[in-house]
Length: 461
Image (cartoon, rainbow, N blue to C red):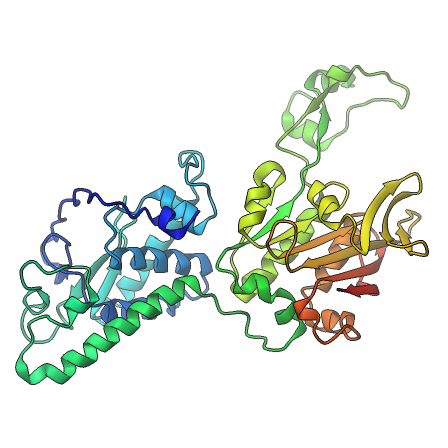
């Protein structure tokens, strides 16, 4: 799917939306396409920059991306109006035919951006030359010139185009009727307009990496941070069964003991080890089943990426597919519960093995080492990090998994901590950032909590 497919560059121009009447007393002018050209891109670019750097937006990575996208689309004068499905495909990695009624991600983000814009515009009511607004029920931003800031004359007259000019042409901006004494200013505005168009496009397509130049963290995550796509955090969801309501009620020791779901969810049925069950007394619950350790690892990565300003999306179970992994960089979490982990690490120097010897991490070769978790407390668990620059999906992938949940947690903590990662890669080849990397870690588990990770093996190729 190309960007042109998403943006829908059709040949037929849709009917323009009716102009919205200004409320009485509104000292602003709305730039309507059927009435006049859009404001100069330089003016929009400056207004957008101020908004994105403001207190309302600086911590909202997704909000900034959303606003950049809709403003850019507006300035490019696409014949097709901006639709929810188009935004979902371009920004949220949704298929072009996804059911927008079942997935409100775009609507929710638009509401959040609208709220932040309204707050910004309220606090800067008389301090900006141009206001950007996102009307309710629309994804097309509107540009309003604040006449308090417009100087002499009417802004509408100053910016009107000659008849039959193309309203979307940057070149046209240079030919707007301007007094002879302002020729130098006209040239400057024309140059700024071209540069601003380039800047707006660049803001959308380029995401600067974390401000950690040369650090192990920056180099480890650089391929993901350089991508314009959000980083997918992919969790497994194993098959999950619960005792049926009938079984709970049959085992009740007092009348009504298990009548309420909240009580069934937090207590076991009263069964003895030798009590017999039939299979229909166990019920599969598809909405349950995410492992505690996988959730902890997800929180670790989500917080880490948020600090770096990198967008991420959490996908669970069948919520992601091979096509998703082909389109975005990803962190894949879980070992024996996640088929993608087994497939991606199969045949690598370190891999997960399940045979008569038990579940373990195994090194390739006849004399390869193996790490098997024993469960006599306090016990040692093992985790494996696999960093693939070009995986079988064609995208950057980091696989984080452990024999048990504690191993995965320790591995996750290790690759988001600068000091720990620096120590882990201390003896690695200097060109390791351009190669694939595997790191085996161990951790001592006490009271079901993983301790600090200790690196016990590293392989780079």
